[in-house]
Amino acid sequence: MLYRRIRDLREDKDLTQREMGEILSCSQRVYSNYERGDLDIPTEILIKLADFHHVSVDYILGRTDKRNMA
Image (cartoon, rainbow, N blue to C red):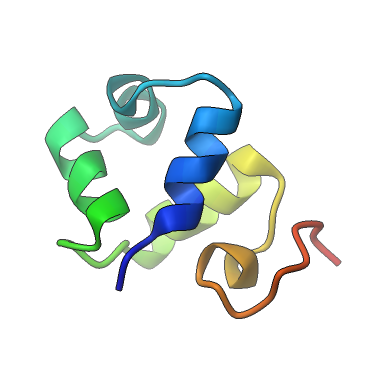
């Protein structure tokens, strides 16, 4: 699964993969692997991403196009 939305959300905030890795307490390489879909995103990280970007987990996973958390 390609996590294009986490890349788009990161780029919307003008953050680098390294900066996102620091925010999530992981390396740039691991974060890059999340974006490419080479690694599944652990639930804990998925929740941190959703909270950080103020979107729902369903939005990140592509289950909805609605960005706002309900």
